[in-house]
Image (cartoon, rainbow, N blue to C red; front, side, top):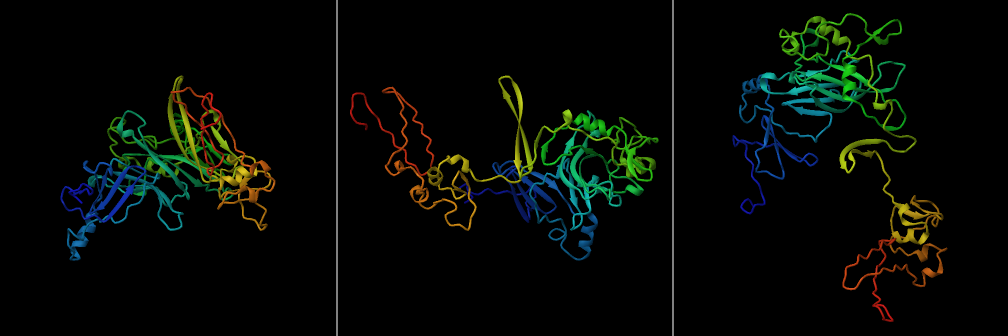
Length: 436
């Protein structure tokens, strides 16, 4: 089989593959191989190309403990990747780091946004603060995206979108959010050890009933994150604009030598900055849709919009953006295409449709045997449609006359109303009495 070309052989550079799991990601065109201390990404259409390798070694302390237990260091003391999951939009792998929105408990209450993996010198597991539910509260993560906010790579950020439950006990609403962290965030010291020190979030205004498509501007999102912070005060503990002194550097700013050579990493932030961002992760202002309203809405319908894809199309008079929207549920019946008479509905032989006495509509099993007229097996309207015109039994059929030029090609087009119909074409030559 190998000589015949029907099988491709892949060997890791060390010839010690030890493959434990395989996953075909058809949506993204990837073949993933889980091996010892690494994951290989192959192109299933071009297996001869050099694969990408994601290093995922076991922690050194775990390896040492394994050796002390008397196990084989090469065959048993490693991170053997045995499970691979399909692509999830709530997870983002970039620059060898894995950013993920997930839950750490079985009930899904302790939701968090984390960063893991990375090259060995920079492996820092970071997550949102578990002790403060106003960071993230029972969130449902939607997606995560890397964004370059400025020309400086140290200012690159990860934006992620999610929905979370309101913390107010009297308010059971679910809020749409956008949050961001710096790519070079390695956590802080003391109260924010192994926790984000640049985490900020803002509200996406989308209050309506039903489904809608809203368009937001990145400029508006950045303006909100550069605006005032929210703060709870007063006897009713409502969110108000924070008017006190803001520490330096501004909380949420990415550490960079360009801004301040003294602050090389997030561990160099002062206690004042760390304390402020821990208790003020929410921005006071909200992000509103462009034009102040949804671009597209659907209300009072029995389905919800779940997916969106935007295609940019170049036309004669310029470029247009076309939206394709997916719904949670769509009817599979196409009964309205089968005409407005009983015979045509019966001839369609569609199990989803039946004649209800007035129109060809969705078939719903009823207790009355003759309440709906349908014949899937034979498609015989004469046995179902009692009000059918007698001409139906006389062999009368629809005729279409088309004219053509001799010794030339003519496209003969006919769209039958039933898949069971037979199409026959006759030619009537000039001067002939009968058709051939």
